[in-house]
Amino acid sequence: MPQGQPVTVPDDNLTTRQRRNRPLLIVHTGDGKGKSTAAFGLALRGWNQGFDIGVFQFVKSAKWRIGEQTVLERLGALHAETGEGGPVQWHKMGSGWSWSRKAGDESDHAAAAVEGWREIQRRLAAQTHDLYVLDEFTYPIAWGWIDVDDVVATLAQRPGRQHVIVTGRRADPKLVEIAELVTEMGKVKHPMDAGQKGQRGIEW
Amino acid sequence: MPQGQPVTVPDDNLTTRQRRNRPLLIVHTGDGKGKSTAAFGLALRGWNQGFDIGVFQFVKSAKWRIGEQTVLERLGALHAETGEGGPVQWHKMGSGWSWSRKAGDESDHAAAAVEGWREIQRRLAAQTHDLYVLDEFTYPIAWGWIDVDDVVATLAQRPGRQHVIVTGRRADPKLVEIAELVTEMGKVKHPMDAGQKGQRGIEW
Image (cartoon, rainbow over all chains, first blue to last red; front, side):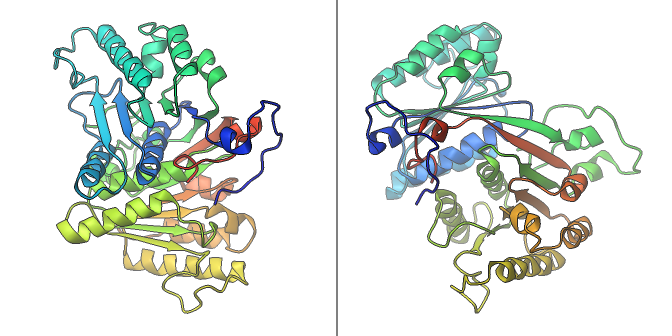
């Protein structure tokens, strides 16, 4: 069972159970490693609890299929076969969002990012998933492609009990402000500093 | 394929391939969330590449079975059934190390931690696993139960191509010194600060 006592008990008229069950907005930011990896690790944990998982990758190349995608989709298939865990959907902007007719059109990244965000808004309204991983979602916000005020309003007002994890460097302060859990992954030392490139099983 | 160019190419007489394939010592430290979760995310990635995975949890309670254990052991079973991925072993100090006769004896945590470390030393010498997760291993070092010089000497001289991930707060500077990849997870904001306790699918 979970350990630890809150330092303060807020005056919010919620019971401990109600407070415990509030959906979380989680942000993994900073210049270090582990932002996405920890998010997919949380997806693993959620799968095990039967959560419906939706992953939305905003930046990674279409050709780039990371190990987590293979494994989480395999776990989603396992759910379909045996009922273990929960369903998993993995969507990538780089290869054209799978729900879109414009598959493969990478000519307008800004429009593709907005299209991804509109779909996420629809799913949040429909309460499609229990856990959303919006991987590298800070970048289209930082680049001004997606309006941070729209993001903040949508996330703050999302219905039901939907957890959302946002990863990427330079998270907008407005996003940090409304998040319940924010971790800054700081780079202390990285092998590329010593001239070592990425390797199989570690970087992908 | 992996992206990015090293800033400098070191004068170490290694080819890029040799340098790329050097085993890594990875440390996840700091007061924030995500240290263990990111380590288990890396284990997921390694499993997908067929790595033999060994997880050693040094502190967590015996009764505490985290979602990652269930999922990674399930993936290990999948490997045995179908050949997908790699084998997975998960050992916990809290329930008595599984290879030990002293199962369930929690009366001497220091002795149990040393026993775990001795087994890891044997496995490193025998090149048993491709990836070791030494979860919360910084604590028995910080508490003086395990000699940091012994740890550093063993890890620095480990044979073959064995990756090692160490998690936990207050990583010893000597361990950081020999590590290739060190990430500091910093706490920016945590729900317990606002009186919210842990919840299913997120904390476990």
